Image 1 (cartoon, helix red, strand yellow):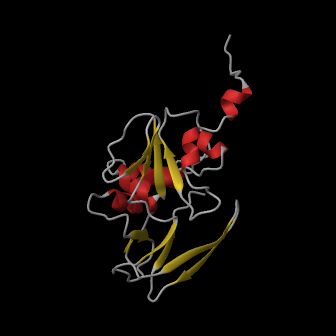
Image 2: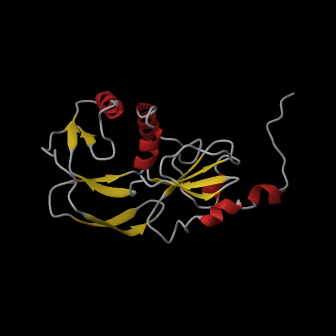
Image 3: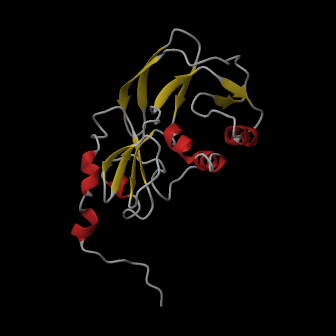
Length: 193
């Protein structure tokens, strides 16, 4: 017979990993995400304690972010940075250029290339389908940190304007931002929902 239940002492499941205490309180700072490398702890441990993760809550992964991850499979650090992955936690050391090591065993890194959760870009490439968009994003010369794909040509081909993006309010089902830009641009949100 198969057994589908796993019985564990509540204290072993509900004890917050000490390494999470090194991160800023997710409710009191500019939003960020943690990439917790598989094998570090039980799935969804960081989410259980209120830390948003790059991969989302396992079992509720959305198709578009998964397609984006597949398109950038050979450029994982760019994907993590685009998805606001400011911190990476791993059971083993990682080769992350210019990353700041915050802890060892488990390893905790700060990603210096992480983009904010919301930012403004000044360049877009028009595409006619989702498949074309993901193919363009995955092309080696496409700079996903400074350009987006859109289903319309807005004539945006320049650098990002010096725009200010400020979080006013963020809740489970809503968010409010103040955006001030001296020039035309695109507000990009790395939301997966």
